Image (cartoon, rainbow, N blue to C red; front, side):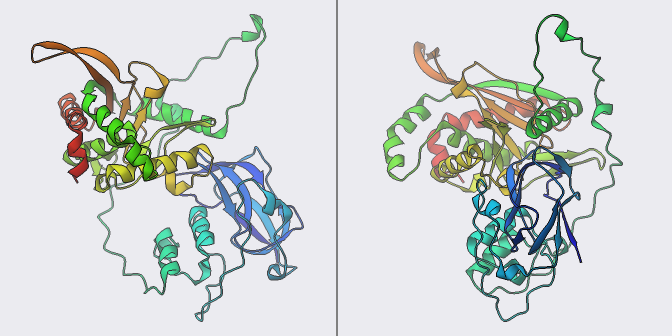
Length: 429
């Protein structure tokens, strides 16, 4: 009997993906968790592992094709026991494809039958830790295995998951979402540019198309308002310079961005309306009591926003270490979906690229974003004297439906005050 494998729900509202590479061929006999395909979503470029073992009867997709969640990717036949076959050469040599590993010894409890419900990112964690997903009891919705379940299984015996706590009262339904075209102006037909000279048409990548759609959605639905400010970071810059070598000795590169992340996270505690999402259908503001900050990273593929978690609870040195590792994974195309989702507030730092200021577009469904430009020495009057000070331009853009101009000014001022007193960022939690 043939079995079909479809594009799984990758989470976070992702509905489609572009096929980057097919890592198996028809006729291959593969084992469970061997990488099948490499796909690109609007969040990341990830591998899709096989949830089952067997013979590849038919591959239904090809590189460059965009497929929806639920579309059939591969059909397996039951002939040929996968347990006696090596993974295909295509899977073993694919870019960034982890080589197949022998399955972990099966513990006395009987493994679950059928494919295990788990995201590709969770399957990657299981492969890295040598955990057989069939022996892990999932604590996620519908029994889905989460990263935390895999790590708990790897560290030793784990008890059955606690009962699911009572859920909050569901919000009132917001009604069907409008198509993107219906919330904006319809563009008029383009002229024939060829009449004035030679042209070239370059297709947009899946990531670029998704960025364009998200930006249009945000700019159309959210009434943006922007507040400009400047922080005197003369003392902070001197502090970073004094501690640069000491931090490098510990394997960490101190950067201004790490301090900005910490200052923003601490300021968000006192201004929760900027660490939120608006549910207009329910007439509610969803205030998030966790502080997972996204940082815009420029890559060859486009702008990607990885997320650093619980910034308010971490020292600046740890933030700097995590930021460097995360940015490297993004630029190398190795970031997982877990690296790129769950953000509550975004920071974009264009200082290295130049410019005096920037007005960013909010990263929907967040309600605020902070842009940082290049710091410059400028003459400043201090105690009646004109002295050179290093001033950092800050631009806070936020959703005017959830906050007023005065709220934005107070929030920006709190970020500025922390950047101007760097010692506060070292002991404040």
